[in-house]
Image (cartoon, rainbow, N blue to C red; front, side):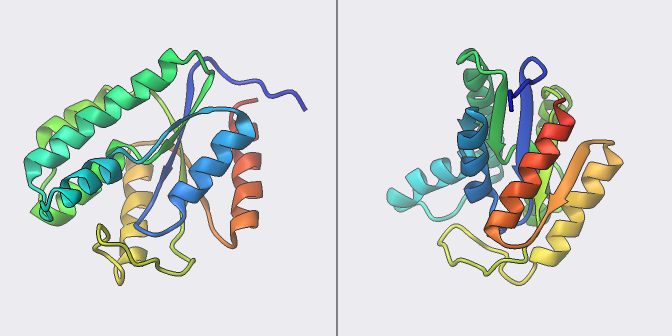
Length: 181
């Protein structure tokens, strides 16, 4: 089946920690021969962690947001019609609010200027995988509801996927094909 996409479409994986976003983003990028924007926050924080900096500040989240936007624009420069993002500024918005009790206005402004995108929300119905950067093992269900609520409030195009890895992939492929027909 020939794959046709709207010019420069973005599919973004989002959801709570350890809910399968990275695995699904990689699978979808391969399936659709799309550009992949990896989780910018992870690479930023891992680099700091390797230098012995284990805490982050609000200013780090703002810097991550700027790097995320640059990474998305770079992916479009590859002249692919479809870009898959392993998270985006929505994660940073929720993260900032969770950690600091409010959303930094610069994150809100950057989100208002993002390209339109379609969201696939990954449910945390898979086992937790321990990781030094993860913080919310027992809060994934509540956080999932925050993602869904915020996406609905913003009238974003989104669908939730759950279940085993193969089922998630098939479901996500069908969702994307429907969106981009």
